[in-house]
Image 1 (cartoon, helix red, strand yellow):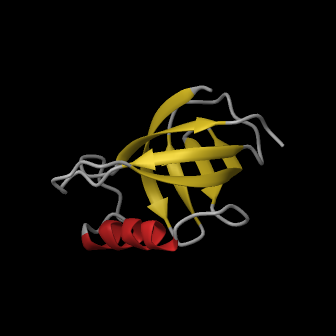
Image 2: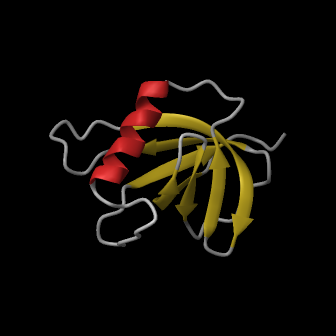
Length: 106
């Protein structure tokens, strides 16, 4: 299973836009997105499943709809991004970094 890195640039309760140069994904492919909150002591990684709904030269749009996820993890991510003014106000020095891996396209 390939692994790539990226930065969350936009997020909502429905999905994320992940800036990455990784291109070996297909539309509708299921991914696991793993991230951590940089300012939290535990440095524990969180994991969400999503499927690719958009590909661009700048990254991937992924959607949480139709896959099983912990709503608390999604809410925590959105809340953290809002508290750090990172939704709609991109600052490359403060973006949550993570990595993702994919399974075969559907």
